[in-house]
Figure 1: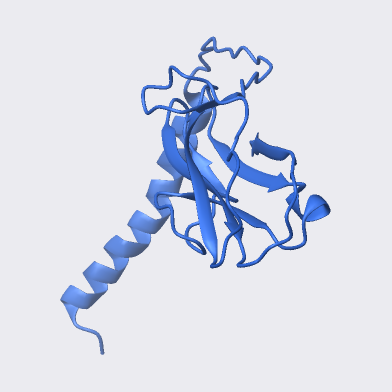
Figure 2 (figure 1 turned 180 degrees about the vertical axis):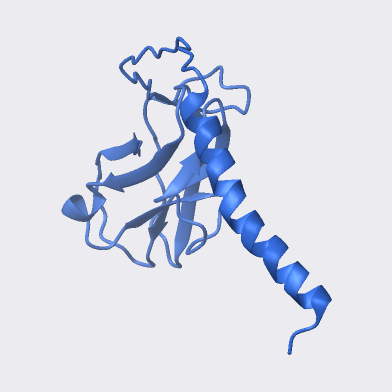
Length: 165
C-alpha cells in the first residue's frame, strides 16, 4: 500500500495539473485586447559603388595609365611594377577583380596584380574585399622573359568591384 504522504503528494500534483491550465485559459481569453500601433518604411536599397585608383596613399593623384617606358633588351627575366592604391569610394563593401588584354598582344610578357607585396605569384587581388572608405595598396607587375621579342606593346587593364546584396 502507498503511504499517506505519497497519496497526498500525488493528489496535489493531479490537482495542480488540472488547475493551472484552467487559470491560464481564463487569463488569456478574459484579458482585453489592446491595439498597439506599429509601422515600417520600405525604401529601395541604393548602394553606391565606386573605386578610385591613385599613385599615393593619401589618394590625391589619380592613375590614368601605366607607362613602363622603354627598356633595353633583357638578358635575364625582368619584373617591372607600379604601386597603385585602390580606394573604395562607395558606401558598400566591394569584391575586387581585374583582367587585362596583355595576352592578346604578347605571348611572352606576363602580368599580375597583387596586394600587400610586389612579389610575383603572391596575394592576387582577384576576390579581395574592400570595405567602404578602405584603401588597399596594390602592385601591378609585368614580367619580361630573357631575350623577349622586341616591339612596342600596348594593352588594356580592367579593374572592377562587385557587390552582392
